[in-house]
Image 1: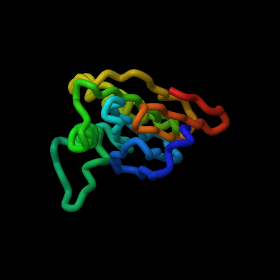
Image 2: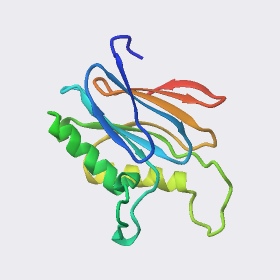
Image 3: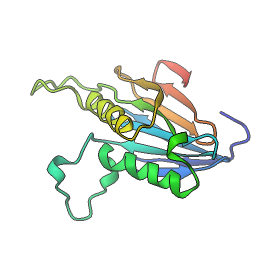
Length: 166
């Protein structure tokens, strides 16, 4: 990653963080979860959302529930956060990583949760008209991600699979 970036901010499960030109957003140990990185490289600001599930069930909400674990809540919130820090929706781009199939459950014939998370992220970005410019998704290995919001650079480390920049 860029040596000029100085602040490493960890983004945990069901969290969103928005940062600027001297920050690196980091998430560790992605399995079926998906991180959605949205950025405006002109404004040098971006967000990383760490999503557990594709959508909240039937609009129900439990008292005190962290809604950022759902793609349909976290992605629009990340966009609003970028806009609040000077980003422009027409200039935004996105990258995603994660969505591994970590376990063979297959009980109900539905696609695995990792695949459903990836599909939900793609669909929501399309609805918001934010181009998905790169992704590293699927497979059966965990990932860790470092994201530089100012430029959109993303470094993905895959367990037993090396590094990849997207």
